[in-house]
Image 1 (cartoon, one colour):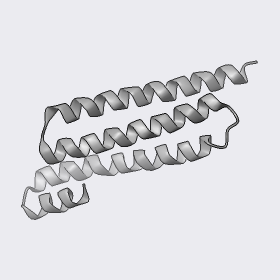
Image 2 (cartoon, helix red, strand yellow):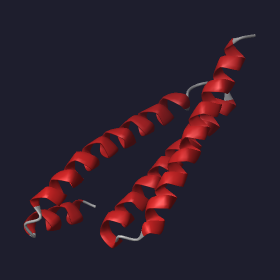
Image 3 (cartoon, one colour):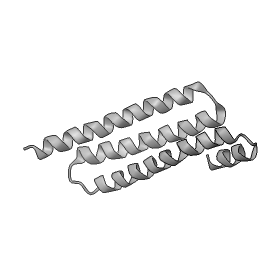
Image 4 (cartoon, helix red, strand yellow):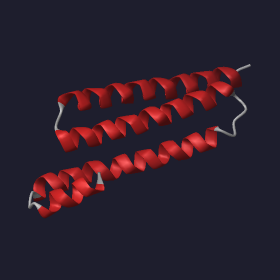
Length: 106
């Protein structure tokens, strides 16, 4: 991905590389946040919270790789796979929040 960013910058496509940088930085921050959340949830005693955070992190990582594939190869299916993986990750995180709230409620 970083090679694509530098190659795009060298080719003189400033507007496209600028948009890539605007997209790449939040995605990198999202990945860091997801990994920190996963590590934090590994110390929680509730198994549902651990499972959903690890699964969500794996799905976000897969979505990131498919997003990079979409940028590198321009295939539309990479974009739809990225969106689907993100949706499944959000489902995991929401399920973990629901399980945690339900566990704390009793």
